[in-house]
Length: 348
Image (cartoon, rainbow, N blue to C red):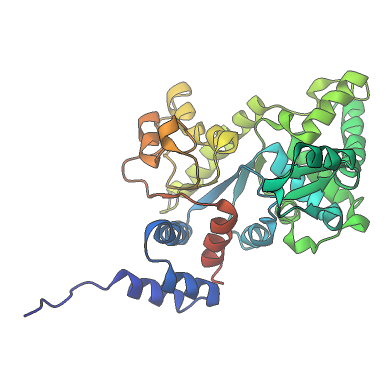
């Protein structure tokens, strides 16, 4: 005689959750049952649970996610208050706006694996900067944005004012100077959505981005007199420390905490997650809670000593996560995984 099942099957639980959502979520619930697919759904459900408990979510962006047009899904997450802060590379900060004003000039190169060195040189001669299968047009994107943001750099410099990199980009967007150049629906720009919400953005290592290089050039040439007109990464960490301390204090009265949703690795993820051990160990703010949720989408290989690919438990030893913190890792392509997780959280 077969024993009667006392618990529901995972697929039945997921189907019930998805029944109140749209077709994308229902597809995920039906098909994503094992391995990285199941990890994707677990991370999505965990994200949703974290928000329902009153938590806030910090999202980090590495790689070329803006050029991959993650804004199509991320912008809606921002508008619906599913994201409360973003940490991104300088490339992701600027490339969303490059795409906003120069989308029609981009070129896709689906056969990029077969390009010869001469093919690459020909792209360079046309000022087409390649990111995997997508070429960003220098003049229509990079130089157009440079001209507008340079006005803001110079104005701040002359006024003796200092701003963070993302604040300069917010100034550019709010000025309306780029509106006539928009080539995509603005609702698909995550930077516009963030600007409208005045969302906190932290951009560590901005100096290695295209605009960071341009800024250095304008300081060298004397267009900007004070190199400190653009605030630095250390100041970003100081700002993040205060934001984390204050935000976690407002959430401690309830059930909520601050979660960490990491897309890719690198400085975008490594920089902000260190704020907790810094608060505990260097500032002795031992009452500040750990991150309350952690998920990462990564295809980095742990065995190479890669911190970006390290399993979440390694972060326990560094004082970033606790033994009971909900932890998820999806070892896959973020351009595929992130929009699906966002679709689940948005109920699509």
